[in-house]
Length: 338
Image (cartoon, rainbow, N blue to C red; front, side, top):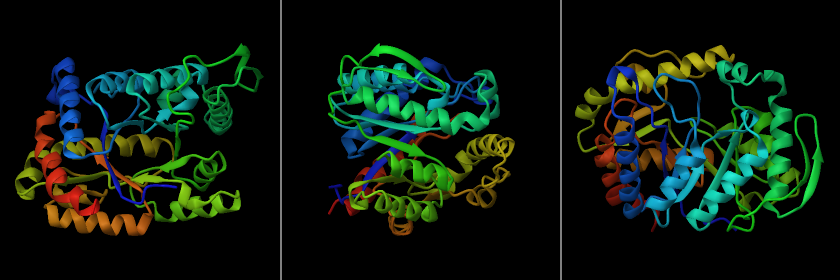
């Protein structure tokens, strides 16, 4: 049975755009220290993201980063949102994920996606139309390894002889999450018994997910949805924060918009570095009372069990977000834990 109290998370990508270049080591460690403060303040989850070959140093190695977070923290769960499974050997994913689960004492949340960025797929020599089949095959291998099976496997993309996973995860069955903005992805999540993870206005997809769970003979109340606004930053002075962050938020939205457009998706629109323009892409900076109402409406519309948003705008020092974390911890999260 899923815990009915809403969980809260922060999403990190460790981007370091050349225009606002920071020392990468300092950036990572500032984020780690911020995660410790978030854990102390009552946040439940840290989510990590993956992309490759980018000048702004978007994090390519989530599970390695997750192990560092595991050493720094004690309680907070460590998730991937998401690991691009077709780009990876699923045995290595299972081994690295299990290692993270061991180091963290059983705090892994393994989120998986098919990927969409054209340059990444080309770099790995992956035909885009094969992503779904690669995903299905990889999920089967990971689930069997997590279950402790010793087996051989001959598939379309992967072949192994006499493999097993050691050490096994601390959790008997680490939870998988599947991301996507299509009925195919959502139904895949339900079919393999995974949670559904995404951002933005995903209400129609969550209904498809729960309907498919029921169709598969699974009780929808036993499965979770993790989602949130792209940005919901909390401040006692939103106008000041908008002036400080708007150029950085516009940078992020326009980068994602280019990638999605190249992949044939257009739900992230190009923006100008103005509040009115950026807000069109589901990005908000609001006061605590507004945040509480917006989260309630979002959860009602999507059925989310875990609410998360980006933590640090690209190019800003992580400490810029400390006010957000403090206000979430003291004024927003407590309203949902009663």
